[in-house]
Length: 151
Image 1 (cartoon, rainbow, N blue to C red):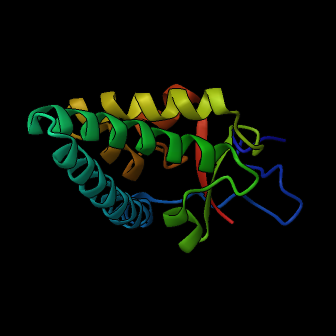
Image 2 (cartoon, rainbow, N blue to C red):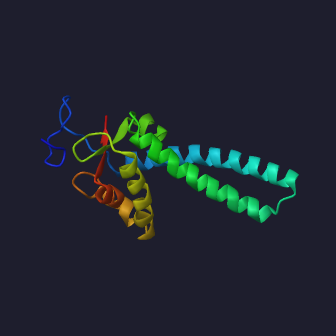
C-alpha cells in the first residue's frame, strides 16, 4: 500500500504528513543557516577580490552565483541523502520521500528545488497549497512527486 492511498509503506504505522507551519519553521532554520554561509562566502570573496583589485560588482555577482549554487546543492544533497532532510527538517523530525515513502534521487531533489521557483513565482501560492492539499503537498511536491512526512 502506498502513502498516496493513505496507508503508510512504513512498518511503524500510518504516514503523518508535515503541514504548512512546521515546514515553514524548517525553511526558516535552513534560511538562517544558508544566510550565515552566504555571509561568510561574501566576506571571503570580497576580501580576496579587494586584495586582488577586482571590481566590487564582479565580486558581488560571483558571490551571488556561488551562494545560489551552494544553496541548491545543500537542498539536493541533504534531501537525497540517507537522512532525507535538510538540517531544518531534521531539527523538526521531518523528511522528504517519494510517493511510495522511499528515498528520493538527486534528480528528483533537483526537480523539486527548481520547481520551488514556480511555487514562489505565483505569489507564494505554491507554498501555501501545503496547508490545503490532502497530503500537505506544496506545488513543488506535486510536480516532483514527493511528500514531506513526520519521522
